[in-house]
Image 1 (spheres, rainbow, N blue to C red):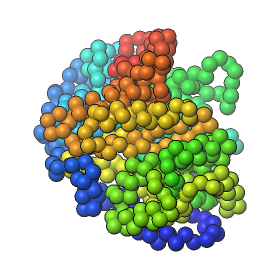
Image 2 (cartoon, rainbow, N blue to C red):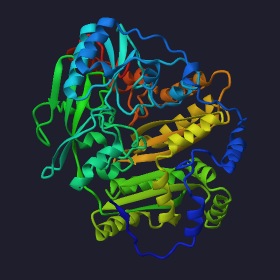
Image 3 (cartoon, rainbow, N blue to C red):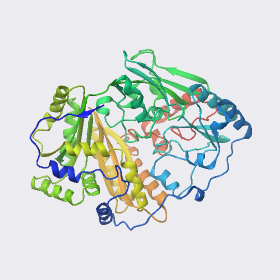
Image 4 (cartoon, helix red, strand yellow):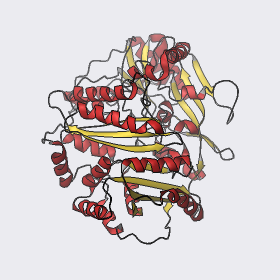
Length: 554
């Protein structure tokens, strides 16, 4: 496994202070420290109002509408014990991990609960389930880790008689490894950490680590065109896909025979990002790489958002990005310090002010390499364009703190929900020339919709031609209409992204997918012809319209 390489350089006098002030809140203890709550109350006017998770018994769950004959046919295909209709089993697959999903589980709004949960053992059983559901006009919602934040796993019936969640947790195997070609075939239900565990004996890694890594699955990564935190080094997930196996109402569909092909359009890319609307992904052949021997993560403070984004653009266009390149705006930087560091973060801010930093922007850079010398060369190439900027090096302490706490967001969010906070994220991407306008438009839309909100932003992924923007929103939760409060704000932000008469300022989703939440904004991005093309593909693969009703195409 990776270990940290020590690159010899002068010791930053801030190192001890940073180590003390940048402890990731929520990485192990989900409760927010007292100083963090004080800061939130001061910034937002938050009134302490708890909203505990509602017990299952307090939630309204309709009786299963799965017809008896359909249930019997499903049980014949996967075994009676693998067709679950108990209330708790169905509630466990009722929605994903968005703010609205979590609030519905706290008793706010209406839950969409599947009529049954089907748990097939292998791709052949998945195929039987899909064909059985098509014959009985039962909706099929593919369910992996349940981490969708755009309504991608809502149990919507559409025009079907009932809807089942097809849980892929038993499809958890490494099918094959080709060490010469560096291709591994993984079943769709393998979660991120297990993929790395299965590849470890072969000395290989997938290198795909999104924030949902701990729960999300290989099939989910493919179905949503996921992008990991180290995408600058390893690529987005669609870049890793060499082949895919799909269970459709029309039968098995296998794609991928060579690393590149001129045999017509690349149909693999039609399946990747299809969000279960065309079929259930059951296996994915992925490109893998040798496990890096060394890594290093560092933190830097740059002065000003515009100069900082210009610096990241320079790295991208010079092709010297670190594997992880993440730039926080002043609001997110301030939020990170105040939610984690307590009084020591105030000392750090005073030091930055003495150094002439008026608008601190945290830049996290991370490199993974096969050797110390390779890492040193790559690190030097990345840092060279940053010379001459007004910048303070925080060193490895800040970088390692970010690495240790990078999966803490969901746990921190639970603590914020407990305290009566509306907390959610949204993301987009655009070309560099449009980045300032896009950030301003989304920020304005959110601030106009939510009073006293903290609206933070970071560049999560950078490319030669543009970058993604990831927004985090924290506001006092409406006691009267918590669901509508966020729905209105999200609609305003989506309209800001997609509703410009001259054309969209950016994409409606860089890596969260379309799901239910973004379906209304897809026409602005792909046009009516694009919708008809996708509709024709769905009609060919899913003529009865049973696959993940209401997603992607609405």
